[in-house]
Length: 389
Image (tube, rainbow, N blue to C red; front, side, top):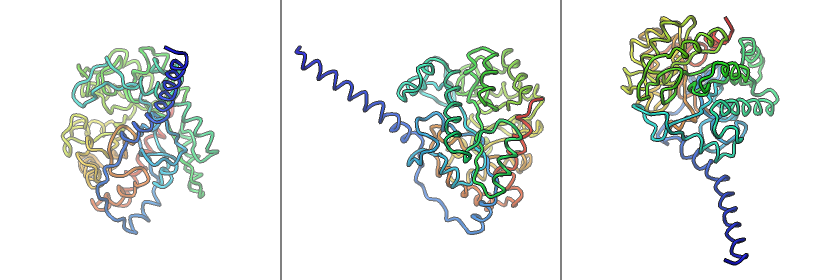
């Protein structure tokens, strides 16, 4: 083979690599986090006025997983700073996703495969994130810190109740400041080491789900192969989280793990994103006994907007799931848990949260109940939960 042909092959490979790393991550993101395009109702003036007066908190978004910046006004995906502002969001919790199984499903997944490794490589993330779940979370924290620094006050880190108060005071004085708090989707990122919880806390994480789509060293998953409860290591971690002021998130945890957590919990827990089986009979969702137990614990349940959570994507279906919890245990235990940018299809992105406000009005929620569900409950819960014991 001539030198000219060799150079031609090398150039072609370089061009293919540039094309791949430039376009494939965006194409995958834009085809994964989508809107279904179905009809939405017209927004009434009274719903718009009420929505604009609310303090809105969303308990779960996976936006940090993707290559796009929070500061870019993207034409795809579900969330960025501009759309948070349009939706009147006061505080957004951003979750760190570190590992997902191939063929992911709600019934049974092993921990033997991982989709995120290829995603990390294709996004040209730091090499340290390619084979370390801990470093993937620390990288997500760095991404949020960089976004906060670039906005010069429009986006602020939330790591204490004082920082929540400061954010709320700024908004009450006419500012458009938005709080951003870090969470974790599955404590497999501890890599089996208790000391890694300290590193995550120091990086700003103030909430953590025990398991994601597979069983891990801490707890069984609702979608794992064994679905066991808390391990001995998991009990140690839950105790340490409570001491530090890291909120325990039972979303995705197995039913046995949920029981174990609630039996030992000294602080209220959260189910950050999901649904209720009474309205959507999917094993991803909470049954009435679990809802009652979470309420007795003083906990909070975030309702998601995708089909697996509410068996539809309409605002009315979201409100129906919230109404079930309200009627069963009280509106003080209901919150928003979108799962935006979590590889889900929704009816509207975060700029359209007014559709939920109007749906709650249509479902018979009072204005005080709507204020609580859309953010008041979450503010109360977070302020208490992220302070050390």
